[in-house]
Amino acid sequence: MTTLLVLIVVVLLAVALWQLTKIFDLTQVGANVNDTQVANDNDNKVNGYLMFGFLVFIYLTTIWCLVYYGKFPLIGDSASEHGPELDNLMVITMVLIFIVQTITQALLHYFAFKYRGRQGQQALYFADSNKLEFIWSIIPAIVLAVLILYGLYAWTNIMFVDEKDHKDAIVIELYAQQFKWEARYSGEDQVLGKANVRYIEGVNNLGVDLSDPNAQDDFTSTELHIPKGTRVIFKLRSQDVLHSAYMPHFRAQMNCVPGMVTNFSFVPTLTTAEMRENKDMIEKVANINNIRAKKSADLVAKGEPALDPYTFDYLLLCNKICGASHYNMQMKIVVDTPEEYKAWLKENSSKTIVLAVKAAAEEAKAAEAPAQTKDTTTVTSKDTTVVAHAETK
Ligand SMILES: [Cu+2]
Figure (cartoon, rainbow, N blue to C red):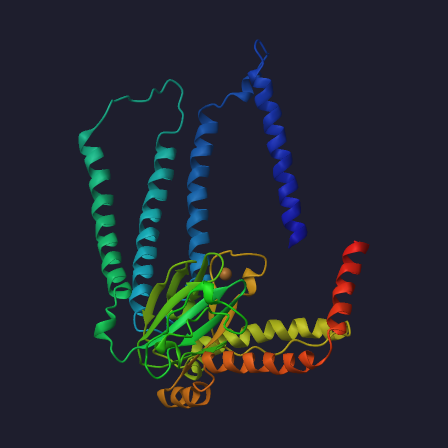
């Protein structure tokens, strides 16, 4: 395949060069231009039919692509309540673009054929046509207005969620930093404690204000667990640069901006286990595993370990190019049943940030204590090593 493509590129380059030399010849003043170089009626007719041929080629390619690749990626398998609405908008837009492009392509090629060059034929000139301009302005204006209004309606529905209306919602903070995610749960009080980048110290890597009463029961996790059927309100923060929290299966994306808190909220509708049972998902996973098996065979032949088989998991990805390891900035999302979620909470909610900070402080204190009992010579000798290092540099 690659050889064929390279061959095609070489041939096309040769044709382009040949045409360029011809153009160069034609531009020479007083050059003896051969009559065969100027297009005659027959040439124009052939080119007119070729335009039609190209139109058929475009349509056949489109039909072929639709049959083989027509299933839109990430459409029809959304796992959030608002997902189908967004997918609908996407499908309407795609269908509209498809219809418009089919008609305009046909018109473009038809007119190119109809008004092909003929000896002695002159173009009709007219300055303007109000009727024509009205038609081609008003139709796109109406279509776009309807599309934009529907889009705005969907946007408002998805984005403007009043927290007061959702008292039972779960509030989770997603904290972005180069190049990982961390989730902070608000604990039993359902209120996240205050946080600021200035409080970041030691194990308190999210900068939680430890003096805030609301922060006392906050705990963090490197795996995002959410229950099916409950609204989750995400508060997004970033420690360093602009990141973007992207949860494709939930049709959710929001920027994480340093110095401010952004929001996104959705209701998950399919647990991880249910999504794994989805017919399309089974097919997709089988396909990935087929590719992996083939790769593994090659790897094993080379004496390298085989690849692990793939199982589906929801993911939180970063969708802003935020640095060298951006591609790998992701966190596993697990959608549990409400019971599973309760069990997970029970297991993890005791590992609060406040306790972790206290434990770390005690550990540091314990490590310091034996050092204090030693005489100062140890410290002096340490210092001289530093000096010695500095001098050798
Ligand atoms: Cu990022």
